[in-house]
Length: 394
Ligand code: NDP
Image (cartoon, rainbow, N blue to C red; front, top):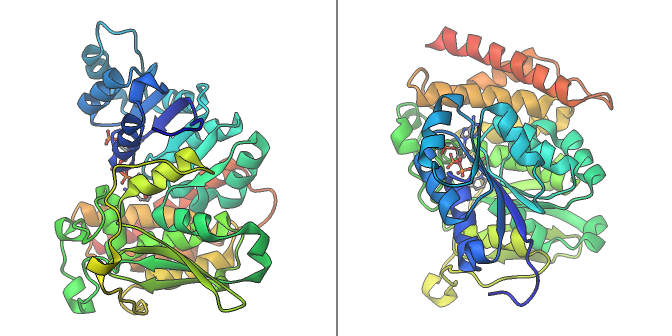
């Protein structure tokens, strides 16, 4: 238990996913329903788990994003006074309900609107969802700033940088160095990678995560999204963001300064550390995670990423330099390509080809008049363009 105040009123967007479950585990370790008011929990297909979570944590409002699952969820919660909602509007309503701290852990672009709803009313946002920053970076940050809440990174790499980047030293920053495990295909040749299956791509060697982010890790699109996220989160020039492959996933990221100092955050790969830090910030809380044993570990390895094998990193740099709507185009085309790979319509290497093709075809508008509708519109256009590219290959 902590000896200082943690946020009391909590909402979890994406409670049934890997991050959502880990968040509830951290809350359970600190008293669960006795210590926290769970204002809203959301999920999509797994309404059985969502209803169990709602009962265990005595949630006030529970939402499935899938309207077809409404009656099933309602039946599962019959006899309780838990309010039930379904669909996009209800998800946004979950973001609007009056929690102090919101875990944004819906996967994909669907997470943007409910997270914005929470940010607008000034909740602290623990940000796991990548799309809020990748697709809507500048706009999303200005919404958080205007709302007055804190933006607390949950991605382990960004949490690491958040922990070691002293804002006073920002002008002396040399590089932000994101570590990458290299995924399951680090030692594969490109021709071996051409034939891999979604099941093997989803088997991450170090981290236990949702399917989509695991496959994105295998293609290094996850690292590409993280580069764009880091640029927005830490107001950093694209040239100051590097990636190094570190297969043990013990160093979660590093910051190097102009005087030669390099600061890193280390720990066993366990998302509860980053979630706990976002919950307790600026304090630290006890967590049920394995402690790092450096002697047992003995060795840490590093290598440069191979951008021939993983063009996603080069494409991220291109997108960061283009700025404006480029992140939204990058993300939307990546999501379509990823779904097509999961559905067996295209091969693993074709995902990067599709993103490259769409980035080349759609101009990335820049400027201060980019609003949320502009982002949704470009998201639709990029998805249509990516779908055409998928159809040509399928
Ligand atoms: P999961 O796939 O495990 O969970 C996703 C959550 O979102 C589930 O609650 C799921 O519901 C819900 N969901 C899925 N589709 C929709 C939709 N269209 N509308 C509303 N809700 C939806 O993902 P993770 O927990 O692994 O990741 C969540 C986010 O955090 C992602 O953006 C990921 O990139 C990011 N992240 C994850 C990390 C990790 O270690 N897992 C690390 C860093 C960032 P249901 O399961 O009921 O269908």
